[in-house]
Image (cartoon, rainbow, N blue to C red; front, top):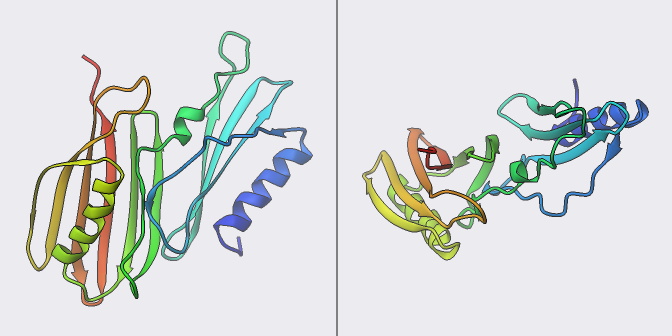
Length: 195
Protein backbone atom coordinates (compact mmCIF):
# COMPACT_ATOMS: atom_id res chain seq x y z
CA UNK A 1 0.00 0.00 0.00
CA UNK A 2 1.28 3.48 -0.83
CA UNK A 3 1.94 6.01 1.91
CA UNK A 4 3.81 6.13 5.19
CA UNK A 5 3.06 4.53 8.57
CA UNK A 6 0.65 7.30 9.55
CA UNK A 7 -1.37 6.78 6.35
CA UNK A 8 -1.46 3.03 6.99
CA UNK A 9 -2.71 3.50 10.56
CA UNK A 10 -5.34 6.04 9.49
CA UNK A 11 -6.70 3.76 6.75
CA UNK A 12 -6.93 0.81 9.16
CA UNK A 13 -8.62 2.98 11.82
CA UNK A 14 -11.11 4.35 9.28
CA UNK A 15 -12.01 0.82 8.17
CA UNK A 16 -12.70 -0.20 11.78
CA UNK A 17 -14.70 2.97 12.54
CA UNK A 18 -16.85 2.34 9.43
CA UNK A 19 -17.61 -1.12 10.88
CA UNK A 20 -18.78 0.40 14.19
CA UNK A 21 -15.56 0.41 16.24
CA UNK A 22 -14.91 3.34 18.59
CA UNK A 23 -11.73 5.20 19.51
CA UNK A 24 -10.66 5.10 23.15
CA UNK A 25 -8.98 8.16 24.61
CA UNK A 26 -5.58 6.94 25.83
CA UNK A 27 -3.75 10.02 27.16
CA UNK A 28 -1.32 7.78 29.04
CA UNK A 29 0.00 6.12 25.89
CA UNK A 30 3.65 6.93 25.44
CA UNK A 31 6.53 5.44 23.58
CA UNK A 32 10.23 5.99 23.73
CA UNK A 33 13.44 5.23 21.99
CA UNK A 34 15.38 7.01 19.30
CA UNK A 35 13.65 10.17 18.09
CA UNK A 36 13.72 10.89 14.41
CA UNK A 37 11.76 10.32 11.26
CA UNK A 38 9.41 7.38 11.11
CA UNK A 39 8.19 7.72 14.69
CA UNK A 40 5.56 5.07 15.48
CA UNK A 41 1.95 6.09 16.12
CA UNK A 42 -0.47 4.25 18.36
CA UNK A 43 -4.23 3.98 18.67
CA UNK A 44 -6.74 1.94 20.68
CA UNK A 45 -10.22 1.01 19.41
CA UNK A 46 -13.04 -1.12 20.83
CA UNK A 47 -16.00 -2.99 19.43
CA UNK A 48 -18.41 -2.68 22.35
CA UNK A 49 -20.98 -5.04 20.80
CA UNK A 50 -18.48 -7.88 20.33
CA UNK A 51 -16.50 -6.89 23.45
CA UNK A 52 -13.18 -6.74 21.59
CA UNK A 53 -10.34 -4.25 21.95
CA UNK A 54 -7.40 -3.69 19.57
CA UNK A 55 -4.16 -1.80 20.12
CA UNK A 56 -2.57 -0.52 16.89
CA UNK A 57 0.98 0.66 16.31
CA UNK A 58 2.41 1.77 12.96
CA UNK A 59 6.04 2.46 12.06
CA UNK A 60 8.16 3.13 9.00
CA UNK A 61 11.01 0.70 8.36
CA UNK A 62 13.75 0.85 5.76
CA UNK A 63 11.58 0.16 2.69
CA UNK A 64 8.12 -0.56 4.09
CA UNK A 65 5.54 0.66 6.57
CA UNK A 66 4.38 -1.80 9.23
CA UNK A 67 1.20 -2.01 11.25
CA UNK A 68 1.15 -4.13 14.43
CA UNK A 69 -2.31 -5.14 15.64
CA UNK A 70 -2.66 -6.51 19.19
CA UNK A 71 -6.05 -8.24 19.43
CA UNK A 72 -7.70 -8.51 22.85
CA UNK A 73 -10.73 -10.89 22.76
CA UNK A 74 -13.51 -10.91 25.39
CA UNK A 75 -12.53 -12.14 28.86
CA UNK A 76 -15.31 -14.00 30.66
CA UNK A 77 -17.86 -12.49 28.27
CA UNK A 78 -16.71 -8.94 29.15
CA UNK A 79 -14.69 -6.27 27.40
CA UNK A 80 -11.02 -7.03 28.17
CA UNK A 81 -9.08 -4.87 30.60
CA UNK A 82 -7.73 -1.58 29.33
CA UNK A 83 -4.43 -2.36 27.59
CA UNK A 84 -2.81 0.86 28.81
CA UNK A 85 0.20 -1.05 30.21
CA UNK A 86 1.10 -1.75 26.55
CA UNK A 87 1.46 1.98 26.11
CA UNK A 88 3.52 2.76 29.19
CA UNK A 89 6.94 2.27 27.77
CA UNK A 90 9.88 2.64 30.18
CA UNK A 91 12.05 3.76 27.24
CA UNK A 92 12.78 7.49 27.34
CA UNK A 93 12.83 9.48 24.12
CA UNK A 94 16.46 9.82 22.96
CA UNK A 95 17.36 12.74 20.73
CA UNK A 96 20.27 12.42 18.27
CA UNK A 97 23.34 14.66 18.33
CA UNK A 98 23.13 17.79 16.15
CA UNK A 99 23.47 16.93 12.47
CA UNK A 100 22.74 13.20 12.94
CA UNK A 101 19.68 11.85 11.11
CA UNK A 102 17.86 8.89 12.65
CA UNK A 103 15.25 6.58 11.14
CA UNK A 104 13.40 4.16 13.38
CA UNK A 105 13.43 0.63 11.95
CA UNK A 106 11.26 -1.15 14.51
CA UNK A 107 9.56 -0.42 17.79
CA UNK A 108 7.22 -2.32 20.02
CA UNK A 109 6.48 -3.77 23.38
CA UNK A 110 4.10 -5.00 25.99
CA UNK A 111 3.80 -4.98 29.76
CA UNK A 112 7.00 -7.04 30.19
CA UNK A 113 9.35 -5.70 27.54
CA UNK A 114 9.92 -2.80 25.15
CA UNK A 115 12.39 -2.28 22.32
CA UNK A 116 13.34 0.27 19.69
CA UNK A 117 15.81 -0.17 16.82
CA UNK A 118 16.99 2.58 14.51
CA UNK A 119 19.62 3.56 11.96
CA UNK A 120 21.71 6.71 12.27
CA UNK A 121 23.44 8.43 9.36
CA UNK A 122 26.75 9.54 10.86
CA UNK A 123 30.49 8.89 10.99
CA UNK A 124 30.46 9.44 14.77
CA UNK A 125 32.26 6.53 16.50
CA UNK A 126 29.96 4.16 18.43
CA UNK A 127 31.68 5.02 21.73
CA UNK A 128 30.80 8.74 21.31
CA UNK A 129 27.26 8.01 20.15
CA UNK A 130 26.66 5.61 23.06
CA UNK A 131 27.99 8.24 25.51
CA UNK A 132 25.67 10.86 24.01
CA UNK A 133 22.59 8.65 24.48
CA UNK A 134 23.82 7.42 27.89
CA UNK A 135 23.64 10.99 29.28
CA UNK A 136 19.98 11.12 28.26
CA UNK A 137 19.28 7.73 29.89
CA UNK A 138 20.89 9.00 33.12
CA UNK A 139 18.75 12.13 32.89
CA UNK A 140 15.68 9.87 32.71
CA UNK A 141 16.72 8.09 35.91
CA UNK A 142 18.39 5.03 34.40
CA UNK A 143 21.42 3.80 36.38
CA UNK A 144 24.41 2.37 34.47
CA UNK A 145 25.49 -1.12 35.57
CA UNK A 146 28.17 -2.04 33.04
CA UNK A 147 29.37 -1.36 29.52
CA UNK A 148 32.19 -1.40 27.03
CA UNK A 149 33.08 0.46 23.84
CA UNK A 150 35.54 0.56 20.97
CA UNK A 151 35.62 2.09 17.48
CA UNK A 152 33.11 -0.44 16.04
CA UNK A 153 30.81 -1.46 18.91
CA UNK A 154 29.51 0.04 22.15
CA UNK A 155 27.05 -1.33 24.68
CA UNK A 156 25.81 -0.55 28.17
CA UNK A 157 23.54 -2.27 30.68
CA UNK A 158 21.16 -0.31 32.91
CA UNK A 159 18.80 -0.51 35.88
CA UNK A 160 15.53 1.05 34.73
CA UNK A 161 13.36 3.06 37.12
CA UNK A 162 10.47 0.90 38.24
CA UNK A 163 7.07 1.55 36.83
CA UNK A 164 4.14 1.52 39.27
CA UNK A 165 3.23 -2.05 40.23
CA UNK A 166 6.17 -3.42 38.20
CA UNK A 167 8.99 -5.82 38.95
CA UNK A 168 12.64 -4.84 38.53
CA UNK A 169 13.49 -3.67 35.01
CA UNK A 170 16.83 -3.90 33.17
CA UNK A 171 17.81 -2.11 29.97
CA UNK A 172 20.47 -2.38 27.26
CA UNK A 173 21.78 0.21 24.80
CA UNK A 174 23.79 -0.98 21.76
CA UNK A 175 25.53 1.04 19.03
CA UNK A 176 27.16 -0.77 16.10
CA UNK A 177 29.22 0.67 13.21
CA UNK A 178 27.88 -1.78 10.65
CA UNK A 179 28.67 0.24 7.49
CA UNK A 180 30.61 3.45 6.77
CA UNK A 181 28.35 6.41 7.49
CA UNK A 182 25.70 4.27 9.20
CA UNK A 183 25.23 3.14 12.80
CA UNK A 184 22.73 0.57 14.05
CA UNK A 185 21.08 1.58 17.32
CA UNK A 186 19.15 -0.63 19.70
CA UNK A 187 17.52 0.12 23.06
CA UNK A 188 15.43 -2.32 25.03
CA UNK A 189 14.13 -2.90 28.53
CA UNK A 190 12.60 -5.98 30.15
CA UNK A 191 11.05 -6.71 33.51
CA UNK A 192 12.58 -9.43 35.65
CA UNK A 193 10.92 -12.82 35.12
CA UNK A 194 8.45 -13.78 37.83
CA UNK A 195 9.75 -16.41 40.23
